[in-house]
Length: 330
Length: 190
Image (cartoon, rainbow over all chains, first blue to last red; front, top):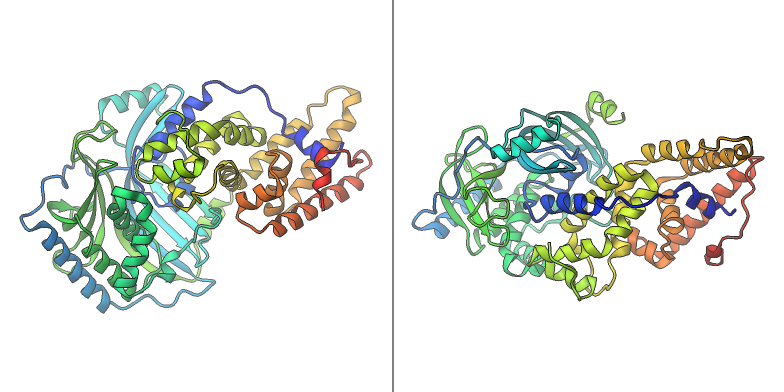
């Protein structure tokens, strides 16, 4: 036999399990059309255990209370103040090729688990620390807390599945295995708002009626775990201020309970309201929040918060703790 | 998700940017290829996780797919290959277990040969290994592998030549492993 035949022999296979397609279809649907990606950057998928999850303050119905009277103008004003503030902030030190951008956040995501016994969704608060090099490689450490369920039906399905563990600590090597996807695209972002708007609009143009919501998502992605200069962050806020459909929403709080100005945009395709949260006094970006609108496919009430993140710390680091590195290797 | 769509993969993926449900057609068309490839490499249980991860990544990155392309299979298999990189240890253990199944005396040389193939694969770089698997197991052409891994076709040729040469050399150094050149894809070799 040739070496190719030997390899094929090694990879021989038995008959397909007819139910596999159905299970995978359900899981893929839950992780794609069942939720949006602003709070689940690609890198987070690398750490997914299949049972990872997330949350929001129990019963939180914050972002669908309705916009203020002068919603779009008020939202734009908040964003422009945030841009002015960002521009005056000291930047991070330069990110060397051998250094890491360290970001610590607390996240609460909705995830749906599809098992042979059925599917369920759970909310698990997670602390997240990530160390990323310029090339997108790095390390991720996450600690998931106690899960909560959005409905009794979800809880019963979890029990029927044998109460699989949803909490715990995970350490992951991030290898940037996403092929041509630029790992830290923010490094090349224009600082001129006009140029940045044109770039993001071009990138989001294929999304048709969701173009502006997608631009909002891209802005959130760039602000989250990417290296950005004060000028880039200011430009991102300036671009957000120009998006049609943005609105200022009353009554928002971040996951730590802080009162926030929430600038939101509705994603009609996914029936979700996406928001960036700002400190009303300092104008600093506090985090993100994602709430369902009426008609959502998850079947939860309008206003249900299915994702949130609070930014805690970001800095340039020279090394990754050995505990994380060693744990990720095993 | 929707039923099969009559359009090309590129057009369907393009349309899914506005109507996410349209991506269901891509799943239905290519599930067997993606799941089957993962299954042959890591077994049935882990293959479901790999296939799920591959389709979720594909959905998230569908904006980058060239809408002029009619067939998304190489692209999807490339994503699956990237997911599988992370499971090489598991895959290697599976192959080692398979290599040991030769129970009777006559099967011992065959088991030894398989074991040496596993060792040879383990000695390859990850890029070489993934290229070789896409060629031998997924049966992709050089052009399709280049598309799958987003590398120039010359890189595919050199990686394959290196990988196959290293496997051959390893097997040639083993007394039970005399790999021949009878494979029908041999004519594509460089």
